[in-house]
Length: 236
Image 1 (cartoon, rainbow, N blue to C red):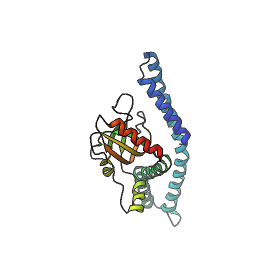
Image 2 (spheres, rainbow, N blue to C red; image 1 turned 120 degrees about the vertical axis):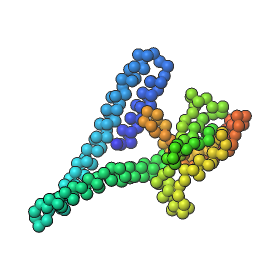
Image 3 (spheres, rainbow, N blue to C red; image 1 turned 60 degrees about the vertical axis):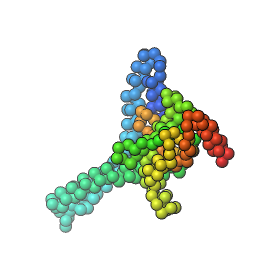
């Protein structure tokens, strides 16, 4: 899908989310809900337009491999044909479950980290690990004291293939989400973070923190420390 297509879908999803959650008349909210199936259909059409040519190309590849390996001395060999079919099924299954997700995540990490990362100063809670996944979630507010209904946002900290590669090449080490989570020392922190991504609740998207410099705060000095950090960012 093109970047324009993704942006359009994201904007439409955020608009629908605002309409559904806003305190408007019930009829307006019902109209917003009715638009959701249409938005999902448009999203699938975009994906089909991209996947169709790729699937056809892969199907031609499989047929060529089958013909190349299934014939012996110009005649079709049933045992060889069965073995090739099994091998192609296993290869395709591995491709779908592992190779394609790995490549997609690597491409996303490279483009997002190198082209769209940003810095921001916010008030953060202490990160919490999500089960045994190695992924952390941490909540942030744009002001202190925090008004959770209007200015809070949820970030994630996770492993990154691209950040692993960069860290190995520069520091002979790997990227560790736990080390980044360790920068949030107290229950309330004023932090300058480097992050990428946007929060879109309907699509399950999160912004990801890739670096953090934090100072512990309490309710009395949070706003002052936050303002100092923002001023430091402006002066860079």
